[in-house]
Amino acid sequence: MELEDQWWKGQLAADIYQALRYKELKLPSFKGQSPQLNLRRYFADLIAIVSNRFRLCPTARHLAVYLLDLFMDRYDVTVQQLHMVSLSCLLLASKFEEREDRVPKLETLNNLGCMSSMNLVLTKQGLLHMELLLLETFQWNLYLPTAAHFTDYYLSIAVHEGDLHDGWPMKCLEKTKLYMAKYVDYFLEVSLQDHVFLCFAPSLVAAACVAASRLILHLSPTWPPRLQRLTGYAWENLIPCTEKLLIAHDSDVKEANKQKCQQPNQQQQQGQTVYHTSAQYLNRSNAQYPQQAPQPVAAPNHLPASYLSHSTANGPQSINTQTISTSLQAKSNIPNRAFQVSMHYTCAAPCFDR
Image (cartoon, rainbow, N blue to C red; front, side):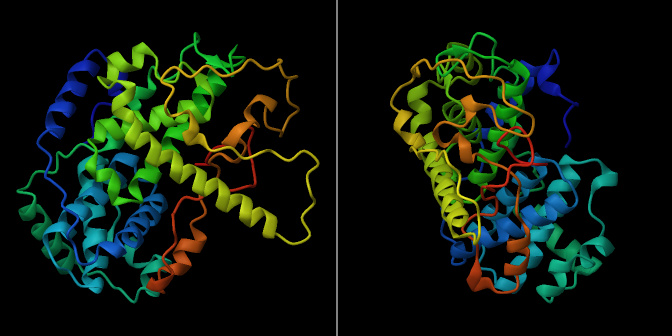
């Protein structure tokens, strides 16, 4: 079900948020007992690829992966059947979260390149049968909040003009909000890649995505009172989940640096950015960063100098799904993460091109 457009800005925002928080208390438990659990990331990537191809909203993508997790947790399904289950989960989630005209059509799905590489042809009868099985499994209840359902509400106050960046007042509030939204989107995708995040409440994962983004962007205080009041989570509640997100981010940065060094005939940059581990700031709930001298205005097509320090220099950029698409044919070559950091910045902000 698609909620009111930008519901987090309306008069009923607080009521809708409380309804989502109440509903997440009744979410089915995830035990992680599927025999095919090692293939989970592969099928989460498949859902992400098809979702991006049809430009489905994040809530549909996250709901689809959550339905897949719960179904795999209850049934022993063959690998070939899991392809059908994954796509059926995405279709159900898109019917629940998107407008009818945005729901993928059967003919369009069968024409996707990845379908031929998987030697899979969907039929109307097969999809209907699988959708009915899924609906019966979940007792026809798809009202299952995910982390993606909470982030927009948190983002509404995630950045404030009173926040400090590296100990100094922000130069551009709107640009910082853009950075924040892109990093939260990045961490949301990170949370899809590992079933370990299912042990946290979706609202807590969403709050941790905001907290991790504020750490990466050097905003202080890290978890201001306004966010604590809005989310209902203190900094201490967020540390375990935020740490896992930052570890994944640091792993992406290291992998990106490694790939960059391996590129042949690449011109060496004179000023090398020192890599730091983001997670080192976790134990400081109101981390104050040392003041730095104000930087000159960056030239067009260059990153602001203040954002080049720390691991933000290799922040999330464009999503490379080409590698994943080719890996769908060989299941032994499952990628470590579908959304890896790209070192080629095509815009002023170190973030995804979406």
